[in-house]
Length: 66
Image 1: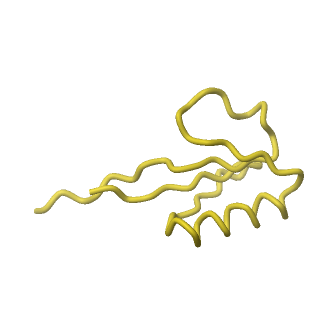
Image 2 (image 1 turned 90 degrees about the vertical axis):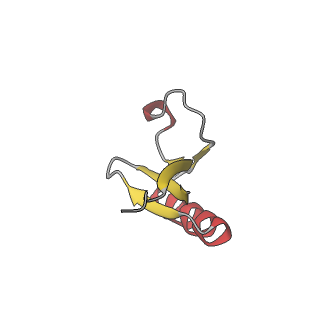
């Protein structure tokens, strides 16, 4: 079986900047959930990333690297 590509965290979009500590992905802080979703949508369209909702005011975007 061939190795599947490993997802790499590309960006974090949150409404609660205190919930994100450290890391190497850029963090985008939104004022509310609507702005968070809009930022995540545009980043995913521009970069072809996948958005994952953590259901705590934060979403992460990942891209598959082979």
